[in-house]
Length: 158
Image (tube, rainbow, N blue to C red):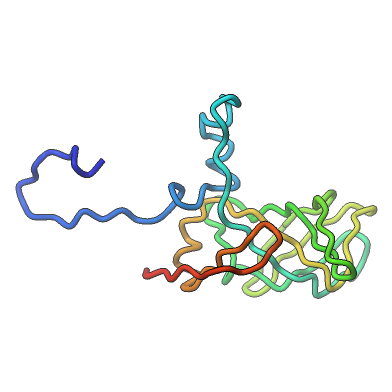
């Protein structure tokens, strides 16, 4: 695309800031992108998932995890609870009845349905809306296999 730009009157450094082209959004742009409306063309998939551990479950309607504003991209929307990894057996299941309702500096507040299967020690995998700020927050981003095995790291410079 840069090659197609017309000549400018002054020298410029053509710079592309990382964003949705690398780490497709799991919120705002997922709802807006035309790719999701044309199933036969495939769909864009998010590249980030933030994992946080349940550190408190004070009652049947609330839980807290150990990631907050300092960890999660949240320019447009709160992170979206998507999956839970059970601390007892490592199985992964949908985060049914679990929603991020608020972020503190170091914790996310989760609202849960009374029947939500969530215990202290479990891990919650969250999708991030507008993940460009993930590149700002995380200077070393792990690359993982579907089973969670870390295979590499990406170094960011912002």
